[in-house]
Length: 212
Ligand code: BEZ
Image 1 (cartoon, helix red, strand yellow):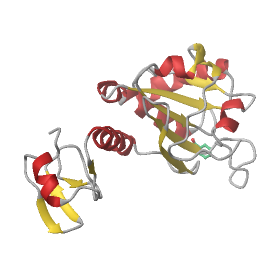
Image 2 (cartoon, rainbow, N blue to C red; image 1 turned 90 degrees about the horizontal axis):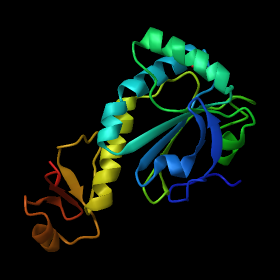
Image 3 (cartoon, helix red, strand yellow; image 1 turned 30 degrees about the horizontal axis):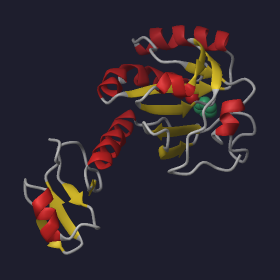
């Protein structure tokens, strides 16, 4: 399988998970999805990440995003590990973890990077839109836990820019000014963005977040 790139169709699969056998597309329905991989069960950084993801579920739900995690350990191992996550992270894991023992999903999504580790997945993140296209790919090494505030921030940007002719500047967060799409001339932009358009340079125009 060729490396997945932005705009590609996210491969569908059916997999054994900590919540039974699930089909990925059926699980996502018409909403957004985050698929993220972990190197292994019963490891410290992964334990904090899955606990954090569980605590963020309410925020992802508000944005119509479903989470699915993956590691190459088995479903029984996942179920035992979830008890530890719940205990140590003071939460309840509330999304499925794929038991990818045969590496089928890891291979589909190119989550094993042999020069980092021959057998374990790296920390991959795929954000998938309602059209089942890949909207974002992030890859972290095993030694670096992910920032779930950043994942929420990216979802906010993806959902905003899917519906409005804007882009989001560096460090943008929901409610802050956004950039008018370069394809729109300033005079036309003034008609579209009725909250105002500030022209700093002909190519750099700001407007208030149209959804705030
Ligand atoms: C961890 O999740 O803590 C971890 C997993 C694999 C290698 C290093 C750290």
